[in-house]
Each structure stands twice: as structure tokens, then as C-alpha cells.
Length: 520
Image: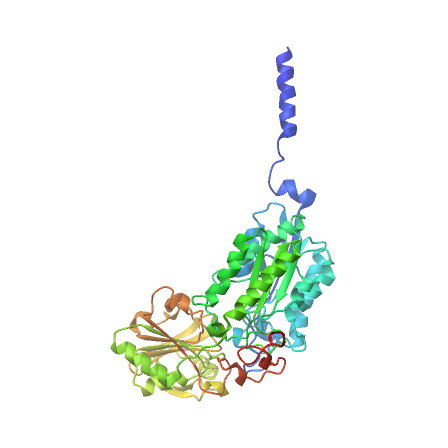
């Protein structure tokens, strides 16, 4: 009779030692970690024409995102959500957040009213969600707002005011961000993409999730250091497929591999935002080791300064010179050729169209040229593929040159490239042009396939892009030759940054246009 009793006793003992079942039911009732998730991301071209960016501009392509709609978005947030959901005791709360702004990075200053409007929605949601154990912010770093010198730092300050001093705040950024030490005075982590084109946005979101969870659990005590090398660079020079840009990011990765619990973030900066913290920045985070954070930050700061000439100085052919280069490539059979019209922020520049036409270059796909007036007429008249086209396109801003008359046949009209209505026109010697209502950066040849437009039919692709187009045209091996073109004056986006009318920063104190005071 003793055996049944002993067996029962053993079972009770084993049950007491066994772990509790995993899953939401085990954690939610006792100690779920609640994390608020928000987004406010814009790469603001303060030198671009078109007027300030308003709430209407932010909602033209769709409403602000809320709850699950925000959590199901991609990029940084997609990575953060995926990383956070690896932990069964984490609950995510999506706060109302602006999504896409019409015109993207061709849009100028956000108004203070716009900033306040979206922050009020976000903070009201945050207040309603309290208490939370952590906050994640999907930012950019180059948001520019009238009368708010450092918008991302202000976002962190406002969030900190709601959650209090002890709740960790982590954020992800684009490497084109303009930051200084102000953001990390309010927040705990800044994770920045290390590749341009930005293949690693999702990865940085995942890293932010893991770091935030460790901090909420008391396993990590963020200790930070920030440095400003004193360098300003045009974004076209920041491609991480070439040295020294690739070497800078590899040095950051090397520090992260050598030292435990270290995160090294490098902002290259976004010079088209006229803000006081413009230019390169290094931010380092360690686990309660200030000396190590300072050592790494100093090393990265000094290294970037040592390679400053190759990093910040460069030049490219003008449109006529580019036309000669393209003609030579065609004669040599080195096609297709991809031409990056890197400076054209509004997207309406016609300089290359004129240069290529005067050189007699055919089989060119111009994708895209901003032409809202032409599109409005097409839409109002109900134009359809096969209809004749005879209108001026582009050239409506000072930097865009002048309009060009195009006579041809409509190849497509309808939704495309993220806009409700665009058009494609066939003209001349096998040429086509894609017309969009605002700036559009096309990264892959297949995106041009619309109506009768077939990418394989073209020898030359002209894109309004600095580096991102290398994804589909260079790194895939699609284009046999890549040519970057510098514009004629007046400038909006250019390597000649000292030609821009900065008011909120003195770039004569930044290399290559001067020497920073602390390096004299």
C-alpha cells in the first residue's frame, strides 16, 4: 500500500518543481511589461519650395495610424514588434501617430501647429495607456519644425514628462538624422541604421526591442556618450558601399562585436535641414560603463575626423558632361545606364531631359518628373492610354529649370508609385517619362512597368535619387554603368552646401567649409 502513496507524493513534488506553463495566460495577469509604441518620422528639406507642411499634407495619403494599424506597419516598427513579441510577457500599445506625408522628403518645414497636433494625439493616447513600463519611438532624426530647434529631443521630452524619470525610452533613427546630445538627455537608447541604402531598419527595430526589454527587467542600465565630429556632408557622398563611409560603419560594428553590451550609433546628418544640430554625430550606449562609452565615442569621433576629406568632399559631372558620358556608354554597349539626378528634391528638374535630347540620346526612361498641372488636366479630361499628349512638364521651381514641351502618346494613366494618379508618356526616339504629382524616388526598374512601359526596352534610366536607387540598379547588377549628376544653379540639393541659405547654423564652423572651434 505504500507504493501508491509514494507515487502520488512524488508526482506532487515534481509538479511543484515544474515551470509554470508559458503563454499569455501565465504572464498577463501577473507582470506583463507594457510598452507604448509611437512614430513621428520625416526627412524635412527646409530649402525645398512649396510652403510649409501641414496636418492636411500628413493626412492626404491616409489617416494617422492607431493601435494595431501602427503595430502592423513595416520598417523600424515591424522589427521592433517582431523583437518584442519574442518575449511572452511584453504587451504593445500603439499610440496615434502620423504615417506618410505627401511629397515625402521634398516637403519643407513642418508648422508648429502640425507638430503640436500630432503630439497631442500621441500624448493623449499615452496618458490613457498609463502605466507603461517602456516607450519605443520610431523617428527619423531629420524632422524640422518651425520654432522647435530639436524636434526629436522635444518628442522625447514630452514623452518623458508623461511617463516619469524611471521608464526607459528607446528610439530608432535613419542615419541621415541630425542629432546632438539633447535627445539622450531625455531618452535612453538611439539605434541608427548602419547601411545606406537602409537595409537594416528592421534589424535596428529588433535591437531596440531587446535592449528595452532588458532595461525594463533591470538587466541593463543605459549609460551614454555623444560626440559631434564637426563635419557636414551631402547625402550623395554617404553611400555605405564605398569608403570611407563603409569603414566608419564597420568600425562601429567592430566596437559592438568586441565589447559586451555596447551599441554604437552614427548619424551622417541631413544637410537639407537648416537646423542647429545638423551634421555628423556619434552616440554610444553601454551597460553602466561611462568610461567605456566615452572611450568608444572619442575613438569614433577621431576616426571620422581623420577620414573627413574623402567622406565630405566630392564632385560630379554636370548635365551636358553626363550626356556625353551616357552617349559613350551606349556606343560601347555598356547599357543599361542608370543616371542619378541626385540634387532634385522637388523632382521637377528638366536639365537632364534637355541635355539628353540635345545630344540625340534615345531609349531613355525619365522616372519621374513632378508635373502636377499636367496630371490635373489629364485627370479632369478623362485621358486614357493611347491618347495624344502635348503639354509642358516639370520646371516649375527655380531649381528645376524651365518646363519642357512633350509631344507624344499617353502610355498609362492611373494609380501608381504610391499616388492616386500618375501618368506615363511615350515620346521621341523610344523615350518615356513618368509624371507624378510630387517627388518620387524609384528604386527598382520593375516599378516602372505600367501600361505599355516595359523596362527592358530602355537603354537609360534617369531617376531622382542619390543612393537608394543603387538597390535595384547597382547592387543587383542590373545597370552596366552608374552616373551621378550635379545640377546647375540655383541649388536645393547639392554638394555645394555653402551655396544654401542656412539661417540656423553657421556651416563655416563645419568641415569642409571651415574648422570646428574645438579643432582649431
